[in-house]
Image (tube, rainbow, N blue to C red; front, side, top):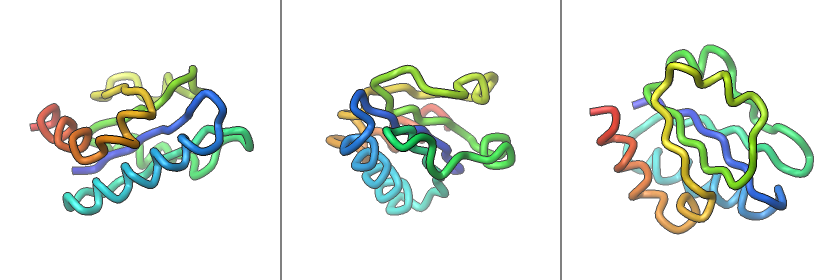
Length: 102
């Protein structure tokens, strides 16, 4: 499965990057390809390409704030959760994505 995601917390520092790392590790452990963009205090990092979004089976938004470029995901299957879910239960979140895509 190909996954793209965006992580963004209210402060834009710690939880944004912790959520990114946890999601990437859980997805890779499950054998999936994942690309995660972060939107934090220093702006957008690891920006998703049009190609990555087009080829994605699902979009995971682990966000606590409004994100830039949400319209890029129109027509895609999207799971949106608070960053805390990605931090505390990344494996369950990946399993939920697998169920949605199946």
